[in-house]
Image (tube, rainbow, N blue to C red):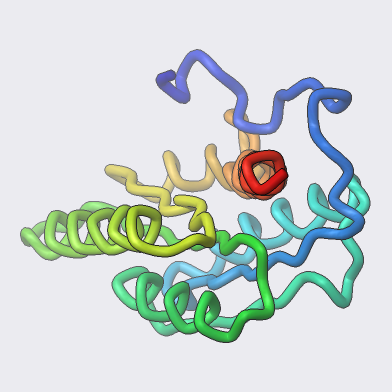
Length: 164
């Protein structure tokens, strides 16, 4: 669904499983930290609202969005998490760099989802300008971090149900 028609922070609280026994990894890009920091805060606060314990939320930073795939893979290999949330922000510039970073990161996260047993949640904001990023990091369109946290909880629940 297009973000323009949906607030990223709107959801049915009661449709979200209890997260008190779930372990979360969050890999966050340092690049555009004003945006990624707000997304991180949204994700952590939402996880806690649903019962996640502080000690079960592992946060690690990577330099940029392209490194989210490697960081997520290492977090999976650690065995300490049930899901990983990959948070980054790429704003279009004057060169094709935007296209390469977005495509590479998207493909990398998709590959992890297809080849590992740990869900990796796509929290990469790709925008044409900084205003659009701000709108999605707690601005008028809500916070993509909230949405990522809810998705992580629901995907862990999905995996748990399949294992029963």
